[in-house]
Image (tube, rainbow, N blue to C red; front, side, top):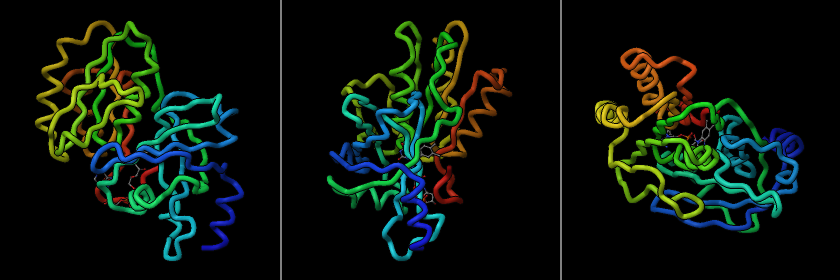
Length: 241
Ligand SMILES: Cc1cc2nc3c(=O)[nH]c(=O)nc-3n(C[C@H](O)[C@H](O)[C@H](O)COP(=O)(O)OP(=O)(O)OC[C@H]3O[C@@H](n4cnc5c(N)ncnc54)[C@H](O)[C@@H]3O)c2cc1C
């Protein structure tokens, strides 16, 4: 693993953890200071591939890196923040629990397509605890005239945390993992409030991403371009990209 670690360290940017805060029973906010943040071509919805398995003897290559969304960025201070949910209990969750202020981290920024898009009039945000920071930053960068409906869920509602500016713009629900029926009933309740051109952002549990995408397209006749989905995790896999 030493060779892979050395390659990761060479090709990735580095930074230092400047603060760590436990936001709720299972979520940690981690702020990172990094020279690379200043010149980062930042788009809301960017994420980092973070080296979480570096320095751990038993790590396999698959357990070296995990993805985390950039929740907030301050280019003047060269800092950005991420929020890590630890329900998975995998290497990423363990890293979040163990990391300390002053630790050096290695990461690479990625953009993808799950980024802010201001072309619609109304937005539907659906996601679980792992996706909350990503949906928060998208919503903060939508222009103020947009109408936003949201279904943010977790079995234990108290684990759902406020946005980085302490605002709580989303509706939180206590819904257990993969309860599609409950989420669809919430969607049916909010659909009448959406006006003009609609767009949905769906992230988190891959089973919910797929099922809601199908529901919007097949039952509610939304077009593919109106739906943005990003599976963050899958019960049968480790560390989705
Ligand atoms: C683009 C992108 C952005 C992401 N952004 C964030 C983010 O900002 N914050 C964040 O917390 N995560 C985010 N994730 C998910 C994150 O990358 C990891 O998948 C997650 O932290 C689990 O890693 P792990 O090593 O702890 O567990 P793994 O070893 O990957 O998985 C262990 C087990 O836990 C299950 N599992 C994984 N996640 C969950 C979950 N949330 N609830 C229940 N079971 C789970 C897996 O299916 C697996 O069975 C993102 C993923 C992607 C693809």
